[in-house]
Image (cartoon, rainbow, N blue to C red; front, side, top):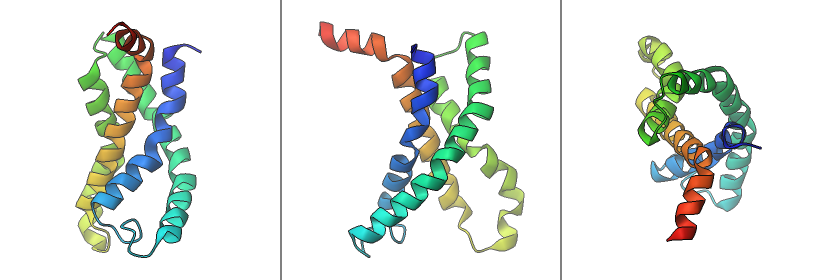
Length: 142
């Protein structure tokens, strides 16, 4: 398995961990451990079952096209992949932004931050997996 295939296949798997980390730091109900570990684990499992398929859909329909565009322009680096991950994750949030104030029940900015952190984590994970061999060689030589 080459590095590109490995990165495409494994990068979205960080989604539930990034989501749970941001939710814990942001003190979201259920993820802040106030209700106990079993509640957290139940939410984590449920969120994982829902978020991982969505992350793969994003990766293959939006993220992969963005990656191929960067590859064609020869602009693959740490910044383009991590910030590109944020942009790809925030595309649906930017599409619903004009309608976000109509409902008033969901905190749009909290959700926007959550999607941004998850996109950043996926982009960073994608960069690490894409450069896995060279990073491993640098660590071995030092």
